[in-house]
Amino acid sequence: MPELRQNPATKEWVIIATERAKRPEDFSSPGSEEKPEALGICPFCEGNEDLTPPEILAYRTYGTKPNTPGWWIRIIPNKFPALVPQGNIQRSKQEDFFRYMDGMGEHEVIIESPKHDQFMPIMEQKQVEEVFLAYRERYITLSQDPRFELITIFKNHGASAGTSVKHPHSQVIATPITPMHIRNRLEEAMRFFDDNGECVFCVIMKKELAFKERIIFETDDFVVFVPFAASSPFETWVLPKKHNASFQSTTPEHTKELAYVMKTTLNKIYKSLHNPDYNFVIYSSPCREKDLEYYHWHIQIIPRVAAVAGFELGSGIFINTVIPESAAKFLREA
Image (cartoon, rainbow, N blue to C red; front, side, top):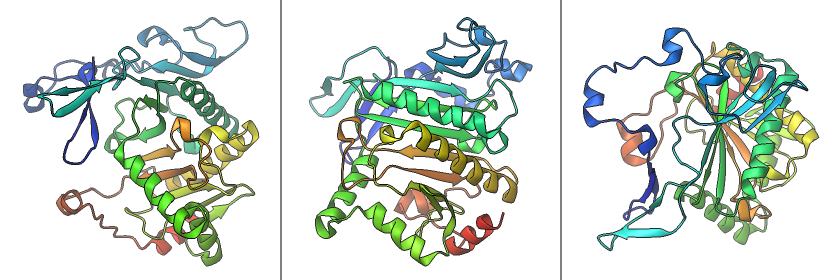
């Protein structure tokens, strides 16, 4: 059973991932276990369904059976989950001081295509729409579980972004806590609203659209830009123009437009930076706070073109070596 442990000095939670546990000596010697992909067998490719846990949900051709070929989107439990569905959400203490709880949650993999090399920037638009509709469906379903406080949807592309299987996929993790990283964002947004009577993200978007130089592009419902204080080269934000705190609020049509926006943005990054590793995360309000007037759901894209070093780790201040206005112009013209 994984554990959630809280740092008493910072109130930050960490996951002790027992399902992925390694012995300390494993970090000082080459691993001997050969994964299926290293042997030329991808567990996420169509026809290899028996190499993964049974599917939770699949978009598939009518008449085909679960866990067989015939799908175009497939969602499965992570074989090595950070959190597991069993357990309870009661918090305990060790030595009457260190707080911990069962590592209860949900950890799922969204396999984005049956094809091994169809990455999101170069997928057909219809397929990207299906991926984002799957995000929406799983978000809505998981958010209805009263045990979960936060649903995080994210994508790791490339080794330096944290992926271990090349086949295009995303992940969803539902947690029974709202971590300090998110609480801090919510509290700062609340303070701004209390002082100004407006959502800080709405104001940021309005100012960026007026300034124009950090805008990459916009559609009727979304705006894409490099933020004023981008923490790393080519960091990019995607915001819906209409205020909504929760990703759950997206309609199917709105989700399809988001898919177009994300494919276009990732294609610009893919072409201009020659297929860099990257992460993206959908930031949304906690499940039971979906109607907040001071928070605004959004997507953050981080191309992994620069390493985080000692000063960043020690100070929490990131060094960005690309001027945000220059980064936006470069991507805008891609």
